[in-house]
Amino acid sequence: MLSKFKSYDSLRYEKERLATFVNWPVEWLSPQQLSKDGFYYLRTEDHVACFFCRGIVGSWDPGDTARGEHMRYFPQCPFVKGHPVGNVPLEESEILARIPTPAQQPTISSYDVCGSGRHMPGSYPESQPKEGTWMGLPQHSGPKRKDFLTKESRVSSFSKWPERVQQRPEELADAGFFYCGLSDHVRCFHCGGGLRNWENDDEAWEEHARWYPDCNFVLLKKGQDFINKFQPPPQPSKGGATSANSSKSIDGVISDAELERLLQLDIARAAMNMGFPPATVKATLRRKLEQTGTPFFSLETCIEAVLQYMEEETRQTLRQEEDVPMNVIQHQRLQSQDRSITDANVEMKGSLAPTREVIVDCKEELERLKESRMCKVCMDCEMDVVFLPCAHMVACASCAVALSTCPICRRDIKYTIKPFMVE
Image 1 (cartoon, rainbow, N blue to C red):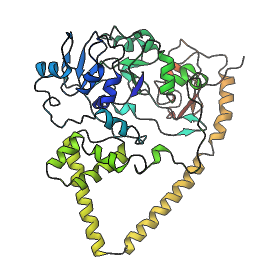
Image 2: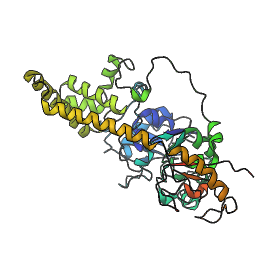
Image 3: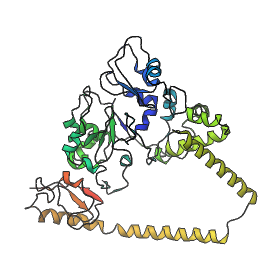
Image 4: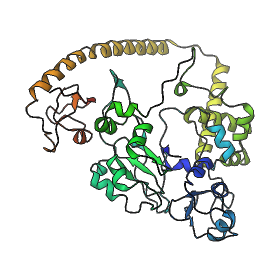
């Protein structure tokens, strides 16, 4: 089943590796066995790759086993040797899937399947969500990857696109995607959103709109009505419920017994084997899950977090023993912060006042430019995008997604709208 991804590190999850086995051609060798041993499908013939050592295995013969061939060709693989590598088994994946994931997550660097040390194209700040809306309009932003701005450049990225995948490079590139060079992973040049595990009947534009409805490229090229066709109906809100992204605790989401099970993941277990108290490692893991929705993927990061937690606990104990009340300086600082927040709120409310005039200006601009609708950037297509707050209309949708400032007044483009042209 087609799915979105933010980073290559998601293949640390056995569940995600298993999902890559779309149209797996070897009937006698189960995808479950392969994914359990660290492999994911490359969508070329019967070739699979280990996430942890980047080793590729193919041309399977009857009687071969995943672990046997893994050890035969890549005996130094840290996963095969039992080292802590951040693997997340299937059952633990199911537990973690229930934990709310914050909208903003720290990015994690990744490498391609060949192990050449270069970062995968499209990693990973560009996959971060955009901030804010105004009157229902998404925040305008320029493309995340300007090197894939043209359709031709995106098509050229598919030079090693797997032949077993039915979607053609022309179709994917037209919908804004370029190839990441890994299995069937593609990313949108504009919003940075990634998709993988393509099935035969998946349509590129439809899936782009379904999985990334906030993408400005889809909005400007296809329109909001097209996006709305592929969105699920809104669910009725329940009284007193809080959004998943605002959750600060995993209490009630997973049980204490399940948290104990997650404590047996290889990284956490290795930290406890080094002598760190299990209770401290457990508390640190809980904090990590609440902050990011993911466990630790490296032993070094885990140890740093455990040491930081222990230091904070020591400081808190010392403060409680001293029992020092808040002094005058702290009180003054809090008062100053309150005044700053109040002033900022007043300024923000004032800054929204002119936006009503922008809407009126849009109509005047449309009338004035009616006789000269050619895009002033490419001079090929009709202008059909209005920039806000300046209200200039000078570009077509294809050119607008590449701009961050208005070509006329050089003001930052905060929002874009595609007006209806009335003849």
